[in-house]
Length: 213
Image 1: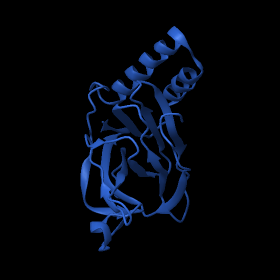
Image 2 (image 1 turned 90 degrees about the vertical axis):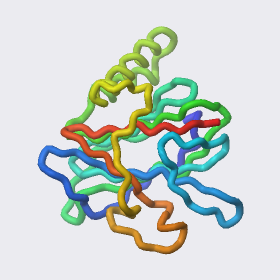
Image 3 (image 1 turned 180 degrees about the vertical axis):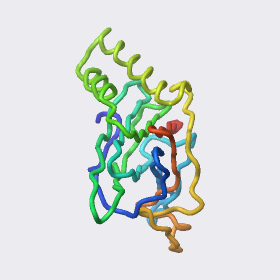
């Protein structure tokens, strides 16, 4: 993707979080680095201000059997699908842990929007709109942009998809792959930490905005 330097995606296995019938949930964590040399890992909170070249890493964990999507709306007001998968069920684990790897902000300043979605059903319309948007040009591209925006707004329960609303709660303790992490380095933060959880009925959606200055 031209607006972010995206590392490879790695899928790992973990322990399933508690969930009620009909409930969809996922965990995630945005991790950054501070300092030079022996850099300290820190949690990036929604609304945080970062600068061009700053590194960040997105970790996520979703239930197997549900669909999970990561959409990105760049500072140039362009959409992209960064991740799309259905977690496969296995006897060893009922969740999948993944990461987009370390990203680096480019020189285009503004709002960096990440939309994380977990769904009981495959969001075929979202996939179709994003695929068509990627190929379209001119007025056709603008039309698909509006359709994507409207669909995300609808999935978000009527809230404006441009306001950067966050439907998530901070975990009491960071976790790694669903296991409580009690390490002493970096105040309990590692490169694989999950720090927040989003929960919803049939669909869980979080909009995470970074202020790129």
